[in-house]
Image 1 (cartoon, rainbow, N blue to C red):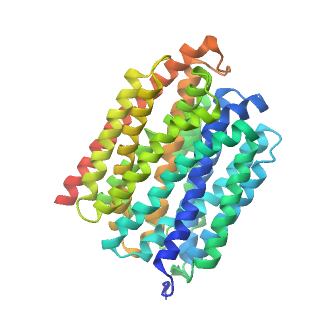
Image 2: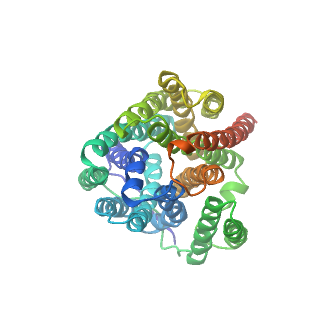
Length: 464
């Protein structure tokens, strides 16, 4: 018989602080990388397209392992998997600072993705288990606010570290944050959450799932090369096989009925996927633009990019609080629509000589849209499923985020490959790089419009 062990001794406030500490770690590293990539590329002689793999390798692995680890967490305990994930991420981040080649750095970032998958698959699930529905929006809003604070701190402190102490130091700083998060978790995260003790783990489904996501994301990143289409086809075929296989399993690694039988969950997940697919590559492109085209150093570029994350952090707190009192789906749709307007601004007004003050204003507008979208959308997702599905819903949310980020980076890499090829970004190619940005932003805008429609359709479903 299935046994469920709930955490009856946890202090929700202290446990939320632990989750927020861990939530700070991953985005801090990711946003720090934005301003460090040009220096890393210069040291290892990496071209612009190759640089995308420092980010993409991590995203692929995290996306592929997140759902399987969420299922493992339900069987053996969410806290166990969470603590293991923090440990793996911290150790590999420390080792990344000692990288001696591009291949070593990319490989270590990929292994870091395993640790991140363990954290992402459990973080939101634990928060949702700790707080009742009427208080969950505020807790999720605080968690998202911490994520955005980390996104703000990354370019600021990362740019300072890279400029004065070298790119290696951002990994040492990240390992320090990870050590603190692990210490807090050991001290304050009490009890355990086991929703599927004694159930069998679906190895075959996990392999099919990993193959499908890895094939789709890697194939997309290689487009328009012939190999890209081959990997994409293999990934899609594996995904179709996975869905059919999971429908027949008594204990599936992912209950696909969450998508087929729950339209609110499906549309909210789609909105999250499209949101990140249309936005994650913006910071990457702007990091290159500010340093290569506008000649700013990493610290100065970080100060420009930081405005968006600061605004996001404040508005995500407000949106989380509001989502407990009004339609969270409507709030998320409003946020997505604002992101569309921000993308249109970048597409039509960003040039070789755009005043940096105008760019800061556009990024601040983006921040409002992101903040209004993220925590309400997550609240809708977690509120649309049964508590025993919290881990899968949490992992699905993280997978949509990471798959979207991977697609976004793939679009950015494809645009650069189309206009510049595998050349370094030198002054003679600055106009071609601007063409790459316009192509990427145009695709992002088209995706975001589709996401806004999906989000508005969800509002109609909730009303009915």
